[in-house]
Amino acid sequence: MLDQLLNRAENTGDLSLEEIEQLLNLEDQSDIDSLFACAYRVKTRYVGRIAWFRGIIEFSNICSKDCYYCGIRRSNSKTQRFTIPEADIIESAVWAWKAEYGSVVLQSGERSDPAYIDMVERLIKEIKERTNGELGLTISLGEQSEETYQRWFDAGAHRYLLRIETSNPELYAKLHPADHSFENRVECLRRLRKVGYQTGTGVMIGLPMQTTRHLAEDLLFFKRMDIDMIGMGPYIFHSDTPLIGYRAEWEIPAKKLLNLGLKMIALARLLMRDINIAATTALQALEHDGREQGLLAGANVIMPNATDTQYREAYQLYENKPCTDENASMCRGCLQRRIEKIGEQIGFGQWGDSPHFAGRVKSSGL
Ligand code: SAH
Ligand code: SF4
Image (cartoon, rainbow, N blue to C red; front, top):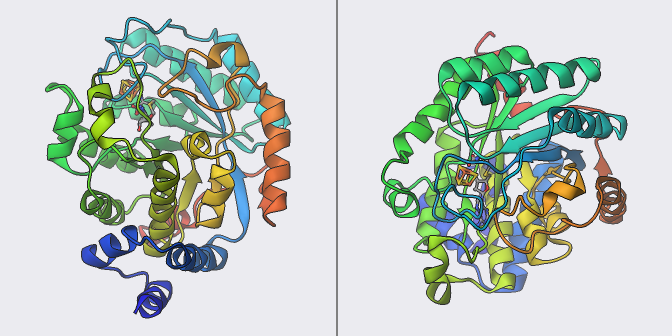
């Protein structure tokens, strides 16, 4: 039964909502391992056994939004706010380029005031200039107007990550204040594509009130939106957020949550074969080799932290974030060893765009 289902998924990439849900609910470890092995074969065939590095620079935790799950939400007065000086952000990017990361991600809390928009534009231009246009640049700076997306694109950013968080509008409404709009977030994903970004999205896994049916719907949402990249990871409770009251009832034990995150990666690979899928840092927060397990379940992107260590402690979207006290080069060294140990290569010095994006641009004649 399971073999038949996996065989079909491997050959066609088609699975119904019910079948996805059934696979997410697998409990027997040898069945789960068959799912991972199947996704790994599809990964090998479509994107190869290469892990692309994106050095992530989390440059500011100042945020105008108030998402109920997030440690750096506007109303959390316990967080000490910072913005890394521009020169230091640029140095981190140049460091990543010299370390042959190929690509960096700039991420921060959400702001849309003119001073911030100008600063990001300057940063993008300067980073491009200082790295001879060689460093790939992804940004993850929340919901913005089309004009702002266009300005940052014209400055040199070419990929954008905007998680939908959950594709279920009712669940979205429970996790955000009333003035945060699900429709606007979906619209932003459309805007990003229109401007020309390689567009990535994702969800948190293990949210309070979230069911496996919701997660199955999330995967079909990604497919319907024809996205180029996915960055999704486990939700981790943060004590200074309103959702903490749900912990006792909804927290999933670490091992089970890790498995659920890995199943989501494997199913995303089966359904959307040639996209980029990240094994996120939050997986590593659950088990020390969580990211390597992510690669073995079908992910092909790793996002080592390239933020200056002195600022890491304050960028706590969730608690017990790994590597907050290591410096960036230690992260590089330890990751390289771990990845080579599982028989994969690191795509040093290249952007590592998703083949899906190349295909999409080609077929639209752009
Ligand atoms: N402000 C931007 C980017 C920074 S937040 C934005 O919201 O798009 C990046 C991601 O962190 C969010 O998309 C969310 O999925 C994730 N996140 C926030 N709180 C989290 C938590 N408690 N556990 C796991 N992931 C979390
Ligand atoms: Fe701000 Fe992003 Fe956190 Fe929401 S998830 S509060 S937008 S940093």
